[in-house]
Image: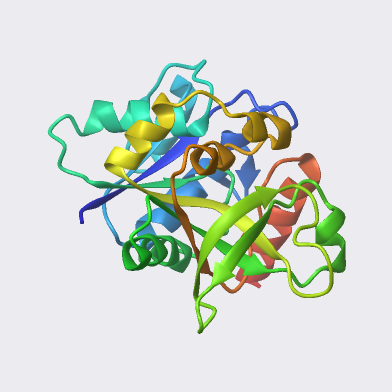
Length: 246
């Protein structure tokens, strides 16, 4: 398979406007995400930008970005638009979607998503880590995945994603991270589907795939990368970067 990594980014975040260009240690957040994706060394990396200023920031850093329509309904629609703009010859058959608000994610997480999808033969691969915080179960901002894991606990088959604390009862819960590996034909099918009832109820796009009978595998990673959704998250990211330089 021949992968391409696409990173959707838009300025109109409701909780943190202008998020892609937020300064983290002197570098725009979207540039940090792009650099981590490049470090995975799996294929070309392109930012799917909703606004020209994001393109300008990437190009100034030596990266590549493509302008996509600003009002697309989801990140998946944005990467599909970008894919059709940059790969009209259908060279790439594996599409990696890395959310643009993961400035400190481990490049190995991309490999884990690809490995889970390719090894198990599913439509989509993603990643999750076991929670070490008792408060995560009740935190609606931490998406939980219910999966059946293989004997080694390295890969699993996803059954459901929720903002609630699932599964019920004692035992570990697994927190989902926003990295996906799509077979190209699976991404095309996915963006052609209408939003599903559970997707709308949970506000989790990946449930659309499950409700349509598509299969999602999960690669187990060591830790969930920090997702920057609020000003408080941004301060955490800044502190983490500063600490890494100490």
